[in-house]
Image 1: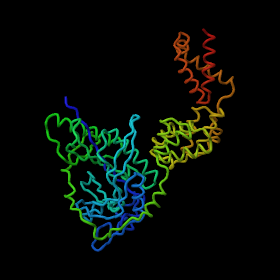
Image 2: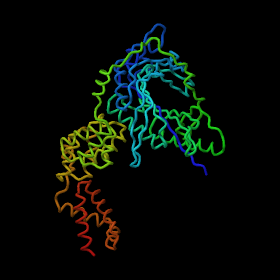
Image 3: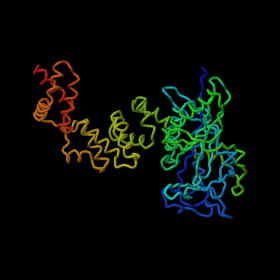
Amino acid sequence: MKRYETVIGLEVHTQLLTETKAFCGCRAKFGLPPNSSTCPVCLGLPGALPVLNEKAFRFALKAALALDCEIQKLIKFDRKNYYYPDLPKNFQISQYDLPFAFRGHLEIENKGVRKEIGITRVHLEEDAGKLIHTREAQASYVDLNRAGTPLLEIVSEPDIRSPEEASLYLENLKAILEYIEVSDCNMEEGSLRCDANISVRPEGERSLGVKAELKNMNSFKAVRDALAYESERQIELLKKRKKVVQETRLWNEKKRITISMRVKEESHDYRYFPEPDLIPFVASDEEIEKIRHTIPELPKAKKKRFASEYSLGEYDATGLTRDADIANFFEKTVKILNSPKEIANWLLGDITSALNERHVAIGKTRVTPAHLAGLIKLIQQKEITGSAAKQVLIDVFDSGGDPEEIVRRKGLGQIKDSGELVSIVREVLRENEKSATDYKNGKTNAIMFLVGQVMKKSKGKADPGKANKILKERLENEK
């Protein structure tokens, strides 16, 4: 049976963290009242002239350099002509034949195997507005606040061979953009968006198959799922000797299928021509080097340093450096308390879980490196148990209070009175005679249940090790 290979290339659009739009002075801020941040330039009114945002230019260069791209020194903008209700000019200021940069690369690691994904081009353009569709009013509304927001497009080579590789590429790219602080990469707010070009071909074939472009994917999971579905769809067509049509398809999250949207446009359909209102200019070597020196330590280098400097394993080093805020939080905590492994465990375990539950970044919480260091120190000094520490952490998230003060106020200090612990053990054994009998009859795993009951009855204040020891002593003596 013929086997097929999936070929994927990604087009990633990320909004740049500028205060104003790409070619005018309107605020580039998410969540403003509809159409409150517009002017003649971003509305495309006759006679309005665009002026390039210098910060957007510098951010575009910074991103290109971080991706090891070759910089195109002659900077030229072009008009990409097409009609959408949320594109009032009926054209988009973009870049066609002379992008900001080209021929870069990004490394991914999948199951221990490293692979380099080529970057075809990086170019700067303006975003379109946004359409809001309502079933109740049976109408569509146009919000032009986003129109003109600086948008960086990063196009990969078709080097990606699976949905998993695509997801890893996106995760690594997002981390780099966040590390260099050119975008917040918030997919929920649309500041990081991804389109995927996907085709399949028989294994061993060198020429590319007919591609489909996938849109409407607003999470890494959606990208993986959409690509997996589309790959199977195209393979099934070829197996049935049917034709794969070049088209744009939308990912339907509810039905978990891709749906045809329109026949895919080619570059000639956009009738590109040079933007007459923006004069081409040259990026000097001095300017490029100046920006290059502003690039901080990137995830790959930081991961390597964390593993070496803090004696961390692959899992910890990778997890800590995936997010710039987490990496910075970790290093600040280590400076307060030199216990890197314990700090990594908390950051990648309970703290990450709490962040995910609250849908918030660590920098937006009340938890500080001093809080985490203080919490771990209380455990190390056997002032509290790990179970009690989890309760304290939640309180710190909610109140921002000092861990030691929370322990004192809530009476969460570890039980140090042996008599009190023996008394709790007696109650647990009396209330769980079956488990006690199971242990005596050789079912040694029953002891874990009994320790859990001691922890529950003591509200997490008992030392699990001591509880285990006392339980075993009493059960052995009763045999």
